[in-house]
Image 1 (cartoon, rainbow, N blue to C red):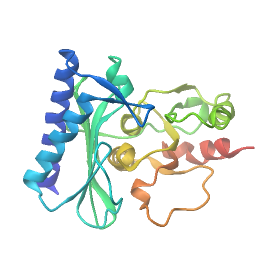
Image 2 (cartoon, rainbow, N blue to C red):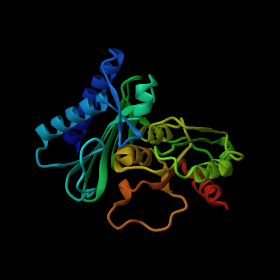
Image 3 (cartoon, one colour):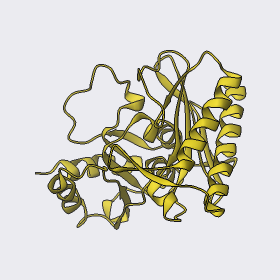
Length: 264
C-alpha cells in the first residue's frame, strides 16, 4: 500500500493547493447543480486534476467522483473514491472547514483514506490495519464514557424536505450532550472524531465520496461506527460506503448515543 498511499497524498496536496490558490485569488465562480446544490469552478478544477493524476499512475482503475458521472458504486475492483471539495458551501464563503477527500478501495473494502484541509495545512491519512495519522503523527479518539462529555457534530442535506425528522434527532440528544456542531464537511467531521476534537458524528444521508476516506481514518483511530434507526442494507452498497444514517463515536459512548438517537 505504500506506493498507492504516497500517490494519494501527493494528489490530495496538489488538489488542495489548487483550490486554496483559486480562493485566495478570487478566481472561482459559483453555480447551482441540479438547481439547489452549490458547485464552484474550483470543484471542477480539483476534480479534473485528481482524475488526471490517478489516470497517469493507474490507467485501469475505476474512479467514483462527486463531479463525474458514476455508472457503478462497486468497489470490488481497484477503485478511487474522490470528493474534490468536501464542504463546498464553506469553501465558497471563506471558511476553513473544507477539504479534499481521496479514498482507495479494492476487494469490496476501503483500504486507504486521505483527507487534506489546505487552509490549515492538515493532512489526515490511514491505511487499513495500520492506524491513523495527522501530519504524520499518530492520532486516536478521545476516551469518554458519558454523553455529557461529548461534543457532537451533524450535517444536513441540501434537500430540506424532512426538517421535522432532522430537528427531532437534535431534540433527543441536545439535553444529554455537551454541545452540538454543524461544521459542513463530513470528511473532516470523521477526522475530527479520529483526533479527539469531536466525540461523535451522525448524519442521515451521505454519498460514498463524503465518507469513504474519513470513515476509515476514524475507524483506524479507534472509533466505533454503525447506523441509527437502521432498517435494511441496500444489496448494492458495501458497508464501507453505505451512508444511510451513519453514526461514528468514541467507543465508550456509541451505545448511549445510539439509544438516545433512537428514543421515541
